[in-house]
Length: 90
Image (cartoon, rainbow, N blue to C red; front, side, top):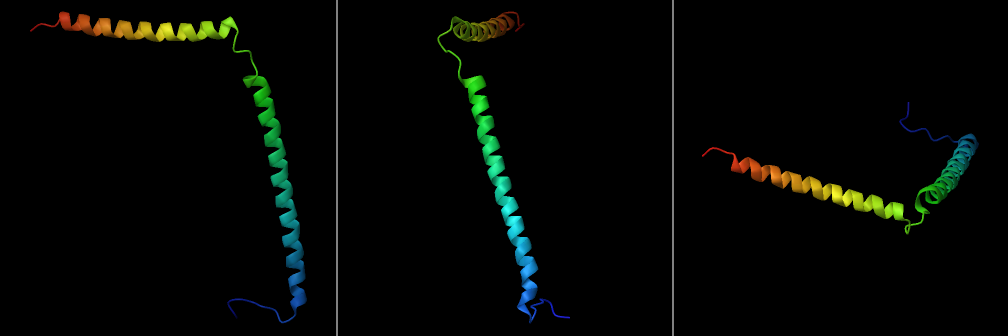
């Protein structure tokens, strides 16, 4: 038996060509579907999460609270490390 089969009658290629065309159309349709769905989800995300007013006092308060909280943690850490050094026996 031959390793590769090339038929003498070239009409045997027709069914495989038809199948190839069907699968290519399906692949293109799936790609277009996913592209459109992705664009809709991107628009939904942008509308929901990106379009809020940055001038509101709430957003600034939250930012300031986070900054003061992080600074207080750093201050406590340096205080505790300096107090530990003071109490160490020599």
